[in-house]
Length: 415
Ligand code: ATP
Ligand code: MG
Image (cartoon, rainbow, N blue to C red; front, side):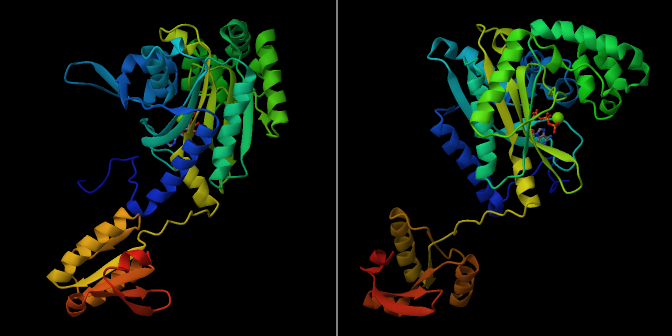
């Protein structure tokens, strides 16, 4: 118990952290090139934010949230996704009063969902994501899709399918939902229990049900029932994607799990060896959300990309980014006096930007060399008592197994 992390959580161990850092760095670099700045919001928010922001009818809010009362008896929820918090911060920070659009990204944002732990499904996972406020043109939809594809490619993840859809706006959706209910009503008895519950409150989600979707292939699609404005927006998005050379598939079945989406929704999917599709990135437009949460009407769009899933796909593809060298130099010392000189030398090397370390465990010289060898250190400096008196040390080239004597004053210059 004590030495076992809670179900559905993972440690990031030091030997693997470079893989995350690389994914995080490409996120920062790619976003900076497109004029995005970082946002960090709290790990927990008032539960109501997610009920309103993500939507009470969604699986995330109904079944998956980590909600608890704090000592002040406030209902608090660990964030299940990044958008609601970003929107809250956008409103609270009065960012709508500044120059728009406001383009932001977040890196390795911890997200919590009480899901059944299984391959690709954790209870704490991490997302890189983007949110753009105050831009309604489809060119920004295409921009964030392009950024998402670039981010995946930059991490060696190819062979992806981009699927897009439009789920309309409240105006055209209301009429469509009536049509959909009329289609579903006679079939309702044959659908799963969850779908029966969804019928009144969120019938679109029925089309997304893993169990029932197969029985509903002739259901009317939102995409065929868009109002003129939404249809035009979708046509423009396709035009921009084409202009950018980004291949896409239209999938009228994507409705996305979160309630706040309007118009564009998209997913980036890869197939796993056992044939089940794995969604690496999901996003969409949420033109009504800022207003819904108490801000001035402001269009918004964003995506979330699961870091653990990116790593999973890298593993599936046999991509293992190499770890950078841990140390450039190791200082082997013998005796207290030598260790004192070693501590000073290591400090000076680090000051110079050379990654350096020395033995802190009073190990034998042989053990110290073995350790340096294990770490793959290229240069080892040996400080031993008698030579130290002469003011010299030995510099060993580990690859060539060559040793030269260098005066203590000149050793720094060798790096
Ligand atoms: P799914 O259909 O796989 O449940 P979702 O629609 O719930 O995904 P989003 O809310 O769109 O997922 O989250 C965006 C991304 O976050 C997903 O594409 C995925 O990469 C990642 N993600 C979501 N849930 C989990 C989880 N439980 N464990 C690990 N990664 C996750
Ligand atoms: Mg989910």
